[in-house]
Length: 214
Image (cartoon, rainbow, N blue to C red; front, side, top):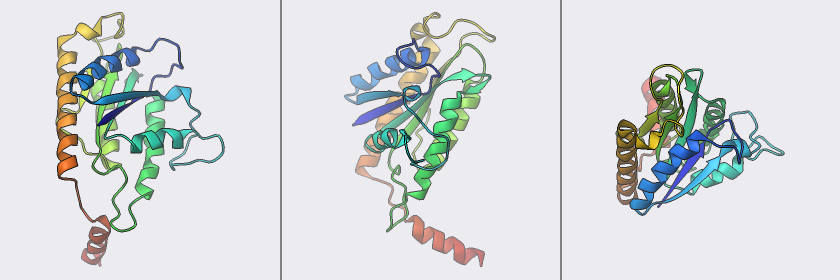
C-alpha cells in the first residue's frame, strides 16, 4: 500500500518548506503502519492551467496524475495563504476535474474510485478549516473516499506568528492527535476498500436519473 503526498507549497526545491516538515511527521506514522510514502512538490513541475488531464505540450500534470493512479491513499498538503489553501492547491483541484471525464466504459466509475484521500494544512494564520473543507469536497467529488477525521492542521495562535518548523509544530499535541487520527483512519478505510471495493454502476444510475427526470 502506498500514500502519495502532494505538497502545494509555493516554494520550489530546495527551499525550506514548512509543509514538507509537516508531511515528514505524517510519513513517520504511515511507515509505522507499513505503508510506503512518496511526496511530490508540485511547484517543481510545469503544470498548465486548465481542467483536463492533459493540457498539451510541456504540461507535466500527466506525470503527477500517473502517480495518483498508482497509489491507494492521496493527501493534499497546503500552506494557508490569505486565509485559504494555496494557489497551487486550487490549481491541482481544477486539473483533477479531468478525472471525471475518464470513467470506466462499462460502469462509469472514475479511476479514483476506491482510493482514499485526506488533507493537511499548515501556516501561521487562520484559514485551516476553510481550506480543509474545500480540499475534501473537491476530492470527494473527484471520486475519492474520505474517511472520518481525514485531516490534520497546524496554524499556531490566532494572528500572524511562527510557522510549523520555528514553532516546533511537531511537538504540538492537538496537531499530532489529528495526524494520528487521519493516518490510521485512512489506512483502515483503504484496507477495507481493498477487501470490499465500491462497485456502483454509475452509467446505470445515470440512466435511471434520466428516466426519473423525464
